[in-house]
Amino acid sequence: MILATMGEMTLKGQNRKAFENTLLKTLRRRAAGLGSWRIHAAQSTIYLRPLDDEAAAHTRTLYARCEKVFGIAALTTAAMCEKDLAAICNTAAAALAGQLAAVSTFKVRARRADKTFPQNSPDIAREVGGFLLSAFPHLTVDVHTPQLTVVVEVREDAAYVHGGKQKGAGGLPVPSSGRAAVMLSGGIDSPVAAWMMAKRGLALVAVHFASPPYTSPRAAAKVCALADILTEWCGPLPYYHVPYTACQEYLRDALPKQDYFTVVMRRSMLRITRLISEKEQCDAIVTGESLAQVASQTLQAIACTDDAQSLPVLRPCIGMDKNEITALARSIGTFETSILPYEDCCTIFTPPHPRTRPRLADVLALEEALPRLPQLEAAAAEAAEFSLRMPQN
Ligand code: ATP
Ligand code: MG
Image (tube, rainbow, N blue to C red):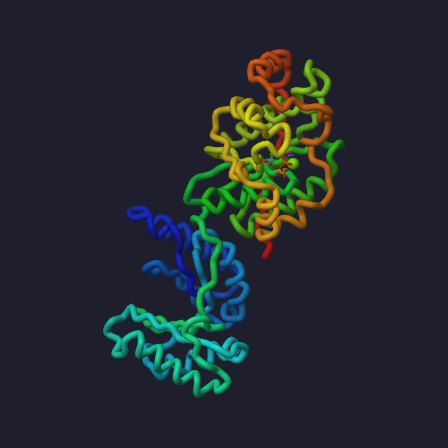
């Protein structure tokens, strides 16, 4: 079976039950197709128990999925047995045989939540430790830095034995914090930004802008692949592919000052994302911007983009170095896809010297000179192609 510890959500007082139900719902969905599982919560632990052979055979698969579920602070596979010292000793020896054979030092840590259990925690630890020493003569006990800690938990319903919990994904269960539209490019930063906000419990809707024929179908497929990787963390992901060519060509041809091209284009992308947000009931927009990384991410440029529409723009990468963002991209599994060398619409028609300190007054005056822009933006939002990305494994 699998034992998972709930994280920060246990601090939520009154609302804790709602967070817990959200997490249980996610876990039950992730267990679908893996046999029959009983999944329930008690105190701050979630118990996932296989009810048939098919489920038992899929324990590793479900475990790997649980590692990517936000709201879980720590997890382990565990064996369950009746609350009897002999049963606990035998279960520990059998269930952890592989792990015990692979190490030379260990210790036993016992926890007794059921105070009616006859032995106290130190007694349980001593008994189980002694039993394992005689069953695995190559072992020695090291209480300070053991290679393996055997954990015995005597709870209300049963006893549980495992080899120590590993760190889970952390954060809050999706969708406990609301819903936001993430502007997803094929780059390194925006998938990381999406992941960071999903970790805080936001349900996401992905919005991607493409400008064919300047951007290729392969570039679009790459962004879909990134969205698919994100679904393993955040669940089914509504995805909008926005045809942006007409807007972009209009800006290229009609914008009087080309050094303002990037900032005006970014404002236009945000307005379109806002239109999709209204339809999808999103209350914020997420981007992968990082302060001063490029010309469009200076404080002045950000001020100009923020003015384009009224939803809050969440930029979780804003204070991160590229190295830090890259490390995170590697650990969440998006990096290898992000570095595939396809073009993005943000990098076409860009002026050789974009304004690093655009002035909002100038931006507003320039947009006055672009009468067709609102209509083109509405048409792009309207023509956006919808698909629902689903977790593959
Ligand atoms: P990324 O690595 O996420 O592409 P970046 O450093 O390349 O970011 P920009 O190209 O300036 O920076 O884009 C800034 C942000 O704007 C991106 O993080 C993303 O949120 C959004 N964005 C850029 N291009 C697109 C696109 N084609 N579709 C949707 N959003 C985009
Ligand atoms: Mg980019």
